[in-house]
Every structure is written in structure tokens, then in C-alpha cells.
Image (cartoon, rainbow, N blue to C red):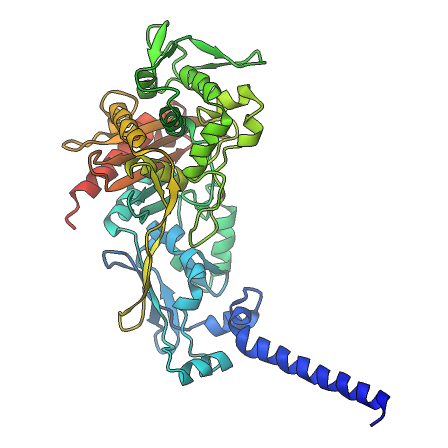
Amino acid sequence: MNGPLRRLAVVMFSGFFLLLVAVTWFQVIHADALKTDPLNPRQALSERGKERGLIVTIDGQIVAESAEAPQSRSFVRVYPGGAAYAHVVGYNSFAVGDANLEAAYAPQLRSKRDLTISDLISVILGRDLRPESLEITIDSALQQAAYEALAGQKGAVVALDPTTGAVLASVSVPSFNPESLQTSTAAETWDQLLADPDNPLSDRATREIYAPGSTFKVVVTATALDTGLAGPGTEFPDPEQFPLPGSSSTISNFNGRVCDDGVAVTLLRAFVRSCNTVFADLSIRLGADEIGLTAEAMGFNRDIPYPWKIPQAVFPTETLASDDAALAQSGIGERDVRATPLHMAMVAASVANGGITPAPHLVNRIFDADGQTLSSTEPVSLGRAMAPATASVLAQMMERVVTEGTGRLAAVPGFRVAGKTGTSQGSDGLPTAWFIGFAPVDHPTIAIAVFIEGGGNLGESATGGSVAAPIASQLIGLWLTIDR
């Protein structure tokens, strides 16, 4: 064979080899990725009417299942948990796709009886093609109580096990019924939900970030205690207004008055009364870098592992390092500081857990059609945010907030509750009310963040202590008395 023919043969055989590799890649190795691609219309047709696994709470309540359609061999997805679970479970809809757990665990939840090459290989290898199921960490009683407590308001509740990071409740309101996206009018319903000015599709618990207000003072106080710059008895000047460096603007306390006697006030008293003037001063003394280290250890400025993408909580350390006026405003949880309720529940959990920040998780285990566990979640932490001694002192300060300060309405008779209130101004000019806390103080089993948008039922007069704290009291009291 002469040279040109050899070269042509090599090119042809190389081409056939590359085609074989490409076919093998797309038909076998990459088949599942193509099959589950949201842009693949065949996937939607394949999924329609197919059985999917259960989603059940940690206490056994079914919140998503496939039911056999009448006079048909196909299945429809039903959601017994309704609107209370919409932003956790999500939906599986032929019209609008998947969301939340239904999307994140679609490969496990869907039946694999598709007769694709990859599924045939699975059969040969003896794998089970029936759908797998999820057991989530949510407690059904706490979840339902949180949903009902928020009714008629815009807001969210997130509750965590402070030791493991298990999500005990995650509720966002207003909400919607996922089953409304299973009907023949699903597309119309979707358009109505998108057009609703109350944004029922918005997951305020994990997907939206807000100014945390004075709840961020927990981060600043942890930094002060941990660095040794200040302790509960350290005294600060007590002016009516704190002048912002390099500016004609000032920071005032909530009531416009001094924090204590107008001369000096301790850090403990300023924390209990949530005095802005002291924390503006303290933030500048600490510096953005020190506060930023604590904030980042608690989950700010970093990605949080979760079944879906969580927006980063923001404490702009680099920007604030050269702007004391902005740092003073940020130290009271305003200006550019932002966090989701999930992040603020993690802040409370960090204190409750002796200074270690637990990584939140929502799925306890995956199990097969016979109920056998296939995998389970091992608790992990994001690292240490403060020394154990710091966490202990801060817990006592937070308890004083509930016993004699701005968080008195979060008290639960017979139990020691620690917390911190917060009130910031929303984009609509109305107050955003917060409460974060944990209980019991001596052996915490729940850390919680309650967030109320637009003042809730109290409107312009709302504060974290008047709107969010009572909800926290109700839910903490329920949790501590549930018979488990």
C-alpha cells in the first residue's frame, strides 16, 4: 500500500474509532445526564406518568408520593403535606418541571424502568430499577405549627438541631399547593403564581437574603468576647447618637434615647437592650477583619452545602476594612450585610453548639423500595466560630435578652431560652422583624430563626420582639414538649 492510501486508511479508521467512542459515551456513560437534562423534551415525556419514590418526614409522615391514576397504568404525583412543604419538597410537574428536593434527588426518586442501554446494564448487574425514597429531617408537627404561626404574614421559619445541623422545620409564606401544578391547568396556575405580588413561589427561608438587623450583634459580640477586646462588664460611652467617622450622619438607638444613664453602659446591658450606639462603636474598635473571620466561620461569604443553591450571606469584609462609617452601620446588621433565615439559624446554632457551626442538612437517608437504607447523612461542621468559653458567656447574655430584654415574648414557661431580636428596614420602608435563639440553654436541642417581612400583622409598629419572638416562643415550647 502506498503512502497516500495508508494515510487515508489511518484517517478513516481514526474517524470510525472516534465515532465509536462518541456513541459509547453518549449512549452509555453520558446517557443519564442527557436523559435528565431539563432541555430534553423526551425526558418530560418519559417522566410523565412514571412512578417516583416517597418523600417522608423523620417521624413518618408522607409528604410526596406517586398514586396510580384511575383506569390507567400511569402515576400522578400527590403532595399530602400541601403548602406547608412546598418550598422544601418542591414539585414534579410535566408542565413546569421539577424544583427543590424533587429536582435535587430526581435521579434517585424516578423509576429506572426505561429500557435504555444504561438501565439494561443495571439489570444485568442485578441492580434494583424501582424508585428510591427519601427520609427528610423535618419534624411534621413543628413544620405544620410553623406554617400556621406564620399564616397571613410574609416570612419564614428555620429550625435546626444545633448539634447535627438537621433541619427540623423550614417554612416560607405565602406558599402554594404543589398539586395545583399537576392538573390540566398547571400552566395557567404557574402564570398566576408568577404574577402574584406576594411572591408565593419565593422561598424566603433559604433562597432570599435580607438585612438581619440586630440579630447580627450576636456575631459582633462573639468577636469581642473571643478576641478579649470586651467582656460583658466592659463599659462603653452612652451617647444619644453615635457620630459616623468622616460623615455628618449619626446612629441612634431604636427609641432615640440613651442606652442606660447617658454616661456609661456595659456591653451586657447594651446587648440586652440592643443599643445601636454601643455596637457601632464596638464594631469600629474590632475592625472588619476580625468580625469577618467570625462571620465567615458562621457561614457568611461562603457556599453552604444544601440540596439546592443557597445564596451567600454577605459581610463585605474588604470593603468595610477601609470605611469605618460603613462598618459601624454593618455592625448593627444594616447597610450591605445580608443573610437568609437559614444562615441566621446557623448563627444561633453556633452559640448553642459550643462555638462549632453545624452544616445544615435536609435529607436523613435514602432507602429502597423494601425500606432498606441505601445511604444516610453523617453530620459535619463548617468549623469553629468561637471558643467554648465564649459560646458559654454569649449564651448567658442571650438568655438575659429573653428574661429581661427585648426578647421577653420569646420566653417559654419552665424552660431556659436564649435569643436575640432584630428589626431592620425593608426595601418597602416597612420593618423587617427577626428573632434568633435556642433552647434549653443548658442542653440545646433546637436553634431557630423567625423572620417576618413588612412588619407582619403589626405593620409599621412591628419589631423583632413584638412579632417574631412570640412565634419563636410558640414553636420552641412545642418542640420541647413533643413526645418523641
